[in-house]
Amino acid sequence: MKARVTVTLKNGVLDPQGKAIEGALGALGFAGVGGVRQGKVFDIEIAGTDADKAKADLEAMAAKLLANTIIENYRVEIVG
Amino acid sequence: MKSAVVVFPGSNRERDMIAALEKISGQRPVSVWHADSDLPKVDLIVIPGGFSYGDYLRSGAIAARAPIMAAIAREAERGVAVLGVCNGFQILCEAGLLPGVLMRNAGLRFICKEVELRVETTASVFTSGYAKGQVIRSPVAHGDGNYRADDETLARLKGEDRVAFRYVGNPNGSIDDIAGILSEKRNILGMMPHPENLIEPLNGGTDGRPLFESALKAVA
Image 1 (cartoon, rainbow over the protein chains, first blue to last red):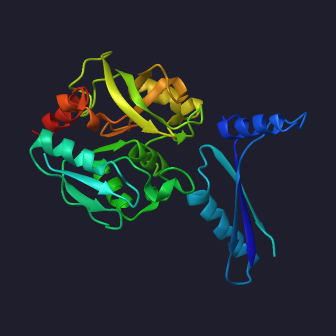
Image 2: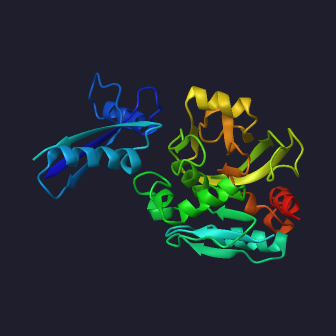
Image 3: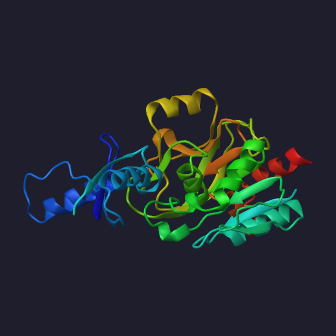
């Protein structure tokens, strides 16, 4: 099974990297770009066929390591 | 004073820390490898600076899950003093032994310079050798030193007198100018600046020395 965990910054958490990227996009001439937030994507292969168990495991992985839940949210999905 | 310095792959300030501890306590600290699951009985455990695991994922995130961290948590619970400097502070936060998180510096740049710190509390084994409000010099060298905590945590830190040091002239965007904080039991100190690098005149100053001398005095 292929899974994807997406980690994003919570609303209100300052994201200086996102701000710098936003500035660079503007400098490239892309007008009307705002609110850029940088996150992370983890593609993970999981052995077995039990999607519910895989999802539960992935949730635990995200909460324990992949995301710092003080500042980040995460989303888990089975993608194939 | 018996002390242990915990070394992770990518730690790089452990030699400075060992030299400082040895000079001040007269006893050479034990180096402990991150994969060990036991700590020798010591009075002080130090997690030094560096770039454990290349700062992969988040600064300190991988190191915080290393086998030795459970032993550090156990010793801290018993009341043993724990000091985390720079990457050590990041690791303590990621491990949940201190609240909050260290994010990328607000200006995005790695900062390597000397800063001034104000000692905010003398009620800990690390700060009892300073005067409250005293301004001391200390080098900083970090890219992720921007301390963040939610409003509730911040109010608690302030209400419980757990802010140990504040920057005089905030270099990294840390909330409320916070440079170092104490645990609830006050025996764990995490700080971004490097007191171990100002302990003798040859370093250019001795402002870091009282921190180690306080810890030494506390166990004497």
